Image (cartoon, rainbow, N blue to C red; front, side, top):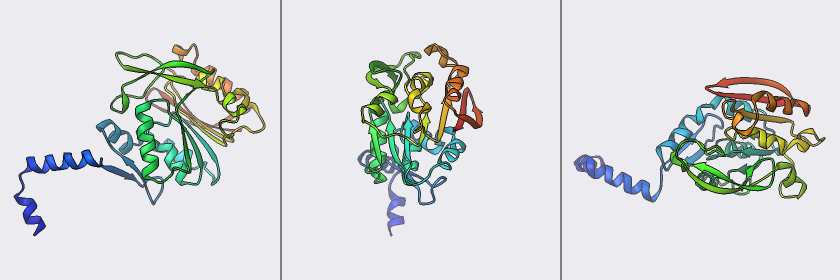
Length: 255
């Protein structure tokens, strides 16, 4: 009976009803590739849908990072976006600190944390990880555009955000010491690494680090891919695996 009634409804009306429903409650996508029970993401734009369904075009990288996790780990997700790493890490038993300075992405991240009931496992911070406490301009088009960046590329919107260093935040007792770090901040890697040198060289350094390097963007920060690698290795880390994706280099380190 219901099927017959649906068949009588014109497609335009069906489409309007669907849009209205999604406006009230946006659709969700459940990823089961990394965790059999799945991790849900709410979708509010085509770009957001693409990011989730494609796993940011780095599903293999996500798998490798998650394979290093042990229950009880303290996981830093620096450049968290909508939470692909943060949420899965939390579901695997980590305590997570998700750094996301972009207001639009942070809103989506918090929503995804809520629908997965991970509020007690994931703490969201609104400042950008850098080499000093400051205020800077973050260039962004929100969740409809490309990843936010401290670099001005073309005509984009902007927002002022706070920055701090990992070393300072740990010293001041604002955040606990991590056991795993994931770093993906669109070329500003050198700033984040310079701001966590004390941590990386300490006895309490994280046992595993994943860094997405952006060699084409690093010169805008007065740095290079080689300088970043040298800094990490000078702190006692060794590369255990690497791969190249488009113009990005994915590096996995252990002490």
